[in-house]
Image (cartoon, rainbow, N blue to C red; front, side, top):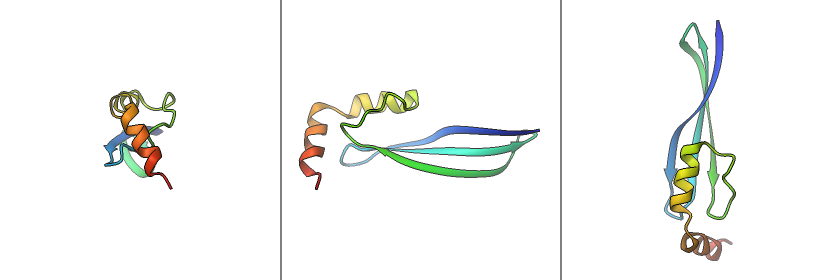
Length: 77
């Protein structure tokens, strides 16, 4: 039996307050991984994050303070 699973397996907070999220997609055959890929995306300060994984939402809520968002916007080219 084949099964496809997607999980957020890595969450990192970068120096500028951005939250980098890595999602793993694995193909399992009889419970054993036979293939896997990774996808990364960034949630920048000020971006919406309501559709993110609950853990990512909690981290963004803690990290994306008004001060962090203002500093990010100021440094943005």
